[in-house]
Image (cartoon, rainbow, N blue to C red):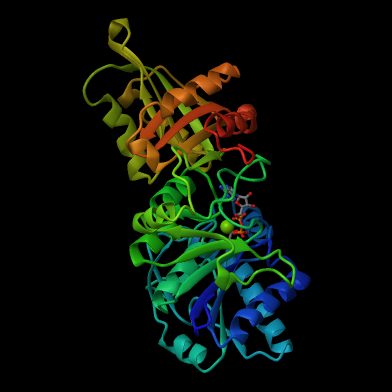
Length: 427
Ligand code: ADP
Ligand code: ASP
Ligand code: MG
């Protein structure tokens, strides 16, 4: 058990901060960590549902909203919860103050609504933490070089927490959420999902990027780069729960640490570590594209220039008459823009029709074991076909296989694969 004084960053997500009653529970957890003499910074999300509500206001006000003003509106949810948590802690007799994104400041670069943290100037906050004051930082928000408020993309408070942990050189970054760790798949979909004691940065990065939203992808990348020690754990625990110091959640670890855990018999090596799903992509099919050099470049260059992220791509074998069909996926949020762009360039690209489909889901299996073992993909294809699930597209990386299926079959596919790879809890 850790008894030495530590510097800890604690992050609480939207469900944990939803209302003053829950904020009181959060304040209790924070007080317990601080009372041992630890230096504590807390990063908070807006109340659950609040960011969606604010985004809707922006849409109602102006469908083509200015991203800079959008950020002013959506960043406000975190300002409310950070102030409320400071007030609640003060009501408990603790010293606490909020440090807004522009006050610290959390400097960001790149586009509004999906900004990246560049630097955090923390000496003032560190001095206050050293004097025993609890620092509360609203997640998700920062400030641009021009002095305007920015936000870090949905789920961005995780990244704020990791960035703060790196800036203050924290011993640990505890991400408190509404589940008690990272599971083999979303525990809300598969009741038999198993909690993992540890996951490697590499696997967590891949899982997050294919839809396991328990951590924002960028937060994992940043933690890996900065060597931040992350633990994912639940804020929904009783007063008699095990302290976070005893690592009751899931640790994100390096490959070397994972090897040690396996050697000690604390973790088992599995071929597949986890399964994730993503319903936020849309499929685009261009029919009868000329089968000649430069044709796909004509399609994808303008999409890249418009910062539309293309994920899976399939080009069919050319038909007679030198034509082929090209299928690819883009984020659903960018579908309308992608379609408009393709319509504009119809003549230049020379395709026959654009067919779009948002009713799809991407299912992915992830595991470092795949690097050295064959047969992971074929197990996936067989398990899905045994249940009559049709695969529309496939993509792979060194530690991942993804397939595109009908959205209605998402839950079934995740369950079937969870069983097929021997991940069910009672196996
Ligand atoms: P917060 O508001 O605390 O940031 P999120 O809703 O962003 O919480 O993330 C937590 C949710 O992530 C869980 O409620 C769970 O449904 C989902 N989730 C998806 N995949 C996983 C997984 N592999 N392990 C744990 N939770 C997962
Ligand atoms: N409130 C923001 C969102 O809902 C950021 C976060 O909660 O991480 O996306
Ligand atoms: Mg989240």
